[in-house]
Image 1 (tube, rainbow over the protein chains, first blue to last red):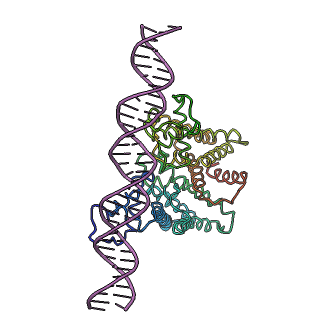
Image 2 (cartoon, rainbow over the protein chains, first blue to last red):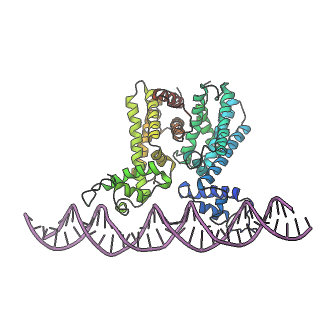
Image 3 (cartoon, chains in turn yellow, purple, red, cyan):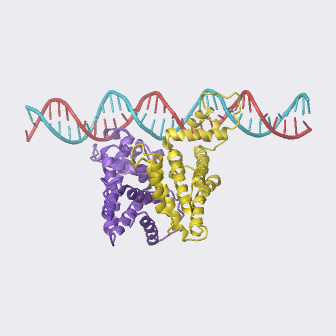
Length: 204
Length: 204
DNA sequence: TGTACATCAGTGAACGCGCGTTCACTGATGTAC
DNA sequence: TGTACATCAGTGAACGCGCGTTCACTGATGTAC
């Protein structure tokens, strides 16, 4: 759905979801700084006043997009785990690679999710999605150490260390701060970040 | 120098530096998304056309501010190291705490330095300042392992691991993603992040 | 030391732009009877 | 099944706003002689 292909009906049908997709495009191309509701409406092929029927303002649209981002982050982590061979630690490392891969594939969205105060992170659809992604990490720590983050304060250090490591890798890669060899093969890349993520894991 | 206290002379004297300070205020209060050159000029107490004599555009001003940020980041790291007691590893950990402290004290500036494409990171004043801060980290790795990042590819993993960990901690803390206990004493905070940073350090 | 003049730094009015918001409207859909 | 009506979703013109940019200007400073 875009401005090139005008709709046949007066009503759109699924403008809400179309606007979220348009917002992702807008964000990826213009960045958060130049993001505008009018731009999203144009991409969705509707008049600039139409979005008001679905989202109170730009921040509400960005909140919905961020929630979708957290869902996709969770899926990226669990998919990578499901594909991984080996033991619990290998699953844990794979989930971290999934986290980093998501960030590298969706830099602007990742930035919205973690580096912006525009989405309302207290709003249940968003906080729930964030909590579910976080749950993948705490679940892995629980499986490896037997310590439950929800009830055992001692699990905190393991959880923070693992999260900070994958998050830092993601941010530095997105910001192109790590000058990795040009055209580094995927295999070597995964091997490098896996070794680093493993280092952040719970103590044996 | 601000709009409350009008200058006595027609010429400002040091508008360039005043504008950088004003830009930092503007950034901290409004964020990158609402940052404007007119706002900086107003804070500096000059007409909105005056900055053009010192900076080509807003991005040039932000580049100068980012360079200053990297200088201050480096100082935060080296100061923390100088104060630390113990061996090389303790110095290394202290430099990481200095990194995290800088980020927490200057969230908007940190965001400009690492999360924005608006500053020109290739411009020598900025890339040099960034390189110097990075040099503190590689210097510590060299001191601990004997491996020189500049010449020894094997040092890369240690450097990336350490940087990613402190950077990830910084971002998560700034974004208020880690729900640390309310009013956690400084000592406990330092102890927690020190343990985590130590985990990312070079292998014994 | 004075004077003339070039250059520099800051002013303030004017401009066009894209933004969010409002509003009366219209076309489409759903529901009561 | 048909009709009347309420509600919903999208339109397009209008608004005021702050933005960056341009421009002729003016006051201050530096320099040549």
